[in-house]
Image 1 (cartoon, helix red, strand yellow):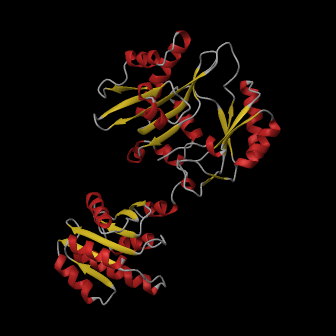
Image 2 (cartoon, rainbow, N blue to C red):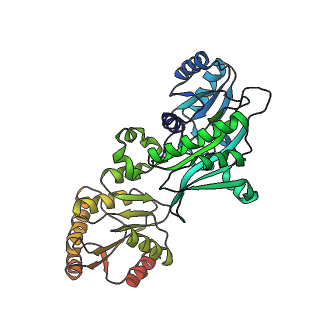
Image 3 (cartoon, rainbow, N blue to C red):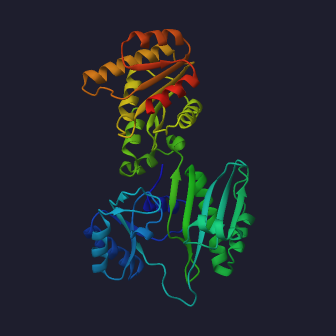
Length: 400
């Protein structure tokens, strides 16, 4: 589950991570009130207006701007709220901005210029350990840094049995070239950041940039936080942080009826039980000259209701030219799935939502023969196959 910047910062702050303070607003009047409040609390005279969407690169699309007066806060907020913000991480259409974060200006003048660093905490899947990735090149795309100057990226792996140790936090601060007060602040920042990562059951923390102010404070100026959905049962309050407006509406609908669905860009919809079989089915579609339009795992209880829900969700995609149903009957009986397909097909026709594209059905496992007989006898325009290769040939045939 992805969080907005302001939500991520609030979570970090709850674990003792120092942040750039800010207040979220969903209209220009609230934005001005937020700016006034920040001025009273922090003494800031300039403000940064940040669009709140689940995508990086907001500044490149005009979603992050500096305001030097309250009138600029009002005008900039008016422009940003409601805009379709396009960034390197959004679709060509962009994402609608529903709210902005008004933050204090922490780039205040001093004897020394502020420095920006990159820092993230994530799982190293190769070693099965969490790691801190960091760089002196903050404020830039980390991908570009990795490509052009990989020697400027450091990593520190954490033993899950001990957690982060003091010498590791000091090592991070040393590699970033810090000393004195900034060194101490960074060691505390790194320690608190890792504790927040573990304590919130996150799968990713990315702070870009981490700022060293001109008076040697270390602050999180931005935040990208992804929480592990599978651990939300341990954090009931986090569920309220989900912003469904930022998520694919078809995926939201599928999740509401208990289907594991990921929307893709292809032309062949697939309905499968089991993630491994789903991946194989997507490979099959690709090898047959098609492109998978989705990942859809109906699980081990593929009854008529779930099958019908799956069909309706797949058919919301206008690019789908065919549907491949590939079920292995282990826990679930194939004849029960077949009956579900027939019932779903019939119910949708009665409701005026008749399926008008080819459906290829491959059922193997428990009661597979009975399932094939049931579909063949139904009289519906459903193509029943037995072998994987046969399914591939049919996909190729119906796509022309």
